Length: 492
Image (cartoon, rainbow, N blue to C red; front, top):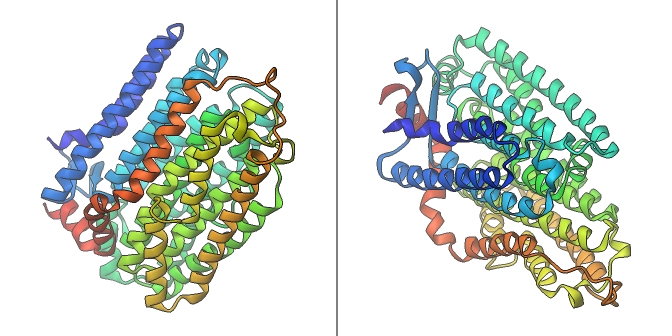
């Protein structure tokens, strides 16, 4: 029955290949892709409940026992992220149905979305470092195509920058894997954890951990984020929402996995560096969020602020802080997708991305305006919306460990997030409307329904935090107790 673990990656891969042969049948491609995400969400819910009842679930491919074979491992942390990924991808697909256009749909758009999701889910499930690299590459190759699809000048320009950065970081990833294998002779994460604990985290292993940190910082946008605002602003709205919700989060996941399972013996060094990088990311993201007048750039810098905030929890590394980071990670995946979709709708309705040229939209499109208002409050951490729980728990962890500077930066960045989005709300939705009755474009249901579902999700996630609490608590407990992961993979 553990074979079910392979399905969240295998189903999208198979669907992506099959859809290549159904290129002329757009409706069929749409519904197959949507069904894949719904089935994956169902599998993730099953896995979550099974893990809660029976513990961590593992799958050894081909009957090869670890550490010699390929292994997939699902704990609550990975299952929660697969569930969130499936929901967000399904809703972005719904939005794409009415916005992406026939040109994209005829150029294997749905195949590459499936490959992207397969890479994301594979990264969450894999139990060894080399397969993490492979799944990263599957995800990145799909994202290269999705970013460049459409062939606009800005897309090609940002694609080159995005590809170069990721090729360099992937090369460093391989180098770090090779050195680690040379040091301890294994790439299975559970076995690696055991070997590193036995030998002690030597200075050379700590140096290798910093190379991993640099790689994941490049991929997640932790401090080394200069590629991110341009790359996330260039593609069509549905693709930008997928990127904003999913891509950086895989880097964040890898950082949590590597620095709680493998390199957790020199917290005063590695986690201090993570804390410094998170603090600088919060400052840099906040400056960017208030400096720009382009709504896509403002949202992209808000993605960067969220990365800094989530990694403050990892730097503090108390149970409350880790739980807070997990809550905030799930919240951010939902809310960032919603924010990109709302911004894309505003740009399509007004024909501009500059907030100076939008005004009074709430008179023409009240539902759009109030959904933007809710997402703004959610991102600022106003209770009872979904951002509140994560902020409180990370703050609690910071107070317990005396990390007052990180606490101050985290909460000042929340004020900046609120200010940057309030500025967009007041500029774009308040004041005299710039759209006359003759020029008013009708809002399609295909735009509104996905945004409405995500708005309900952010409210539901805040109000239903208690239902999610046992799963988040279990995920944090596994992250902070590597023995549970090792026992489940090597000795069950």
